[in-house]
Every structure is written in structure tokens, then in C-alpha cells.
Length: 70
Image (cartoon, rainbow, N blue to C red):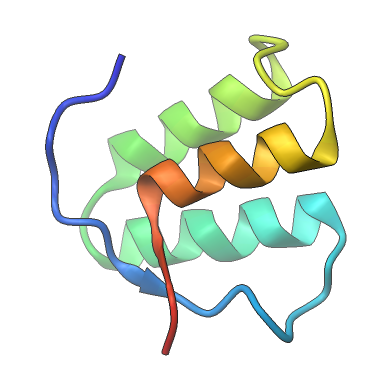
């Protein structure tokens, strides 16, 4: 489903563990990196495509788009 792109750094560890907060954090990092289409895709995959049936599946999808860190 995904094409290759440079994943931006995004601090997930130590932030609010609420999945909606993590989605927002990841989407802001993508948008800041000029990847608005990837932010929209991430949101859609987790919230509407029913690809994420659990918290851990949602985290796995987030990590397809961003690198945890800094």
C-alpha cells in the first residue's frame, strides 16, 4: 500500500498514550515534513479502513509513517 518516502522523526515515547493523541502527533510530524497526503492516509487507515483492530495495530501503522525519536 505504501510507497517509499523519508519518514520524519516523531517523539511518541513519553507523550500522551491516548491513540488519538498519538495519531495527532504523528500527523503533525508528517505535515511539518511536507507529507500532508501521508498524514491523511495514516488517519484514514487507522480511523476508517478498520485496518487497526487494536491499539497495537494502530501503533504499528503509525510506525510505518514516522520514526520514533527526537
